[in-house]
Amino acid sequence: AVAATISKLAAAVRGKKAVVGFDDFSTLGSLREGAELAREERKQGKSIDPAYGLHPHAFSDKTALGKTGRVLEDALFFINRLPDDAFYHGYFTAKLNDLAQQYKGSKEVSPDQIIDQAHLEANKLAMRDKNWVSENLKRMQRGLNRISTFNKSEKIGLGTLVLNYAQYPGSTLKRAMEHSPLGLIDVAIEANRPGPFRERNVINALSRSLTGSAFTFGVGTLLGASGVMTGGLPDDDKEKKRLREIGYKPYQLNVSALKRWFTSGFQKQQLADGDNLVSLDWAQPWAMLLAAGTATSHAWSREMSRSDKAQETAKAMYDSIASFMATLGDQSVAKHLTRYMETAERAVKYGESGTVAVAR
Image (cartoon, rainbow, N blue to C red; front, side, top):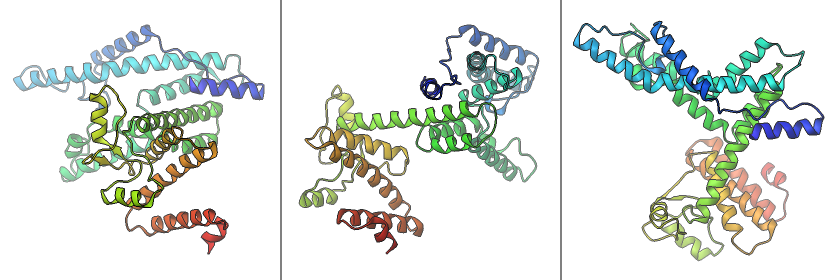
């Protein structure tokens, strides 16, 4: 829906046709058809990706071990392969219908290109797409298999046991990155990738980044307003010193308050002695957005000018990034970058040019 809205707004400004529509995934028939296709392929003995489990008919029914293996194989098929194929087919049908509608009458796009694009988009939604995270996990799996079998096999071994499901965790991590400010990297990549669907791919990538960033910011706002996320340090130096002495840091998750928040029927919580505070600095860039949302909720609950509220939010994002840089320890690049940022901040505060101060 976000991609379709962006596409229609861009089309209205440019006076062109939208390239992304409001595709409908209410295709129960497609889900049923996908499930039937999975069953048919299983009957035919077609090999399936190791991410789904075992190879079809890998066990014989003649022995007790074979029967046990067959039961396991059947369970993995119905748990993994069947619903995955059903949803993939549903996604493919929805994307194919949308592409056919948006590019109807186009002389620049052939029917085969539309089908290929529908497959690519359905693969991404079904977590089947090739991506660098999943591919690296698979390489690690093959490497562990070779090491554990003394280079005799890369198909089975320790890697199969430890990283049997390499595709989905990798795709999930990649999708989390795309649904954050890091998704803007994908936007830039798609913008520089030629092809008839470049505009559509750019809009889809941008919508993922905006949707995920807005959602994370909203969660931070909710947690901040509920007292579950700590705010920034107070202006009073004595109070600031006291909080630091008890281990308080800005924009941390108060696990104890989170539990009280749930059990109290979502009543606003206050920081109490002995509360367990957990730093989220490592989880960038999501931590930055959570901190910004928390700072926004705190700033807008106080009597401040709009410019001061905006400055408070920006400072929270900076503090989150600075804390993340501090966690990198002895890495000199991170240390110097943090020092430069702090120098520039002080320079702006006292009226000196930030660029001159950093250069100095």
